[in-house]
Each structure stands twice: as C-alpha cells, then as structure tokens.
Length: 184
Image 1: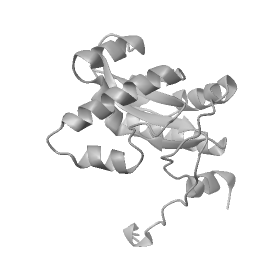
Image 2 (image 1 turned 45 degrees about the vertical axis):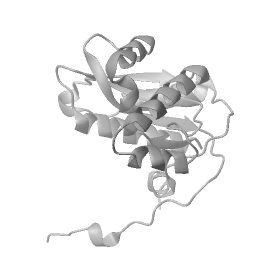
Image 3 (image 1 turned 135 degrees about the vertical axis):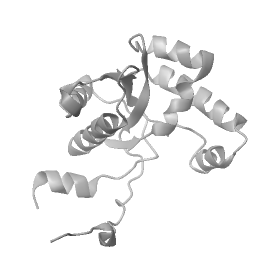
C-alpha cells in the first residue's frame, strides 16, 4: 500500500491530547497543506486560522461547554462530560475554517478539514475534526471570538480541526466494506 493510503487507514479521531505544544514548523506545514486543498471553481472562499494560543483555546472551550450545558438537549453535554469534560479534549492547537458568508461551501470546508486531518496524521500529529466548535462562534461572545481570531468581515464559522500529540492512541474505525457499491 502506498504512503497516502497508509495515512488514510491510520487516521483516527483523537479525544485525549498531551499538553505539549506543536512546533511552528509543524503548524506551518499543516496550514500550507490546508490552503492547497481543492475548492469548487478554485474560489477558495475560506480562511485558514491557526490557533496556537493555549489560553485562548481553553477560554473558547469553557464557553463551548457552558453553552452545551445550557441546551435543552443534554446529550451533547453529557457526551463531552463522559469524554473528560472538555469540548476540545486538551488540544494545544486548532485550525478554524472561516467561510465567506456570501459564497459558503460546506463541501469545500469538508475537503479542507480532511486535508488538514490527513496532513497532520502524516506528520505524526493526532487530530479530530470538531464541528461542534460552532457553538463558540454564536451570539455576542461568538462575535468577540470571531474578532479575536481575525475572521474577515462577513465570514462565518465553517468547521475546526483540533491538533496535538496523543495522550492515548486508539485504533482507527474498521471500514465497513458493505458501504461500497460497484456499478459495472
């Protein structure tokens, strides 16, 4: 099997990160891979925001957990509590994708997230795609965090990828080959 297929097969969603920071060189390599992701008509209607300020990540995490706790449906909050009581699992860095509000593309955002996740995995960096981070960017405090993360005017939260060194490793999910349909 080639190196790319091995990286795809090895990637898993890490939900328990060590407190060790990632190097600027590693984060730059991941960010460069992100902006090389394809997009529809090459519009690149997104910004890639690399957050390596641990205190800021922890502040956003606390707000996210507070918001989840206030939801009527407690299933998300309870699940996060079962997984250690944090939204960002102790990640020391994150990539936030901001989408152009005039032409947002969830498909392009998904491609970008997958590119970040695979680039990180190829460099030995654990990761998890975290769409639930959107709660941080809603409401008045959400606008504050958009400013602090330098979202361009008119951009909205698309998705995020949490990054760090794994505190615990788990096996990737077993692929369900029954999901494949071949038409001949």
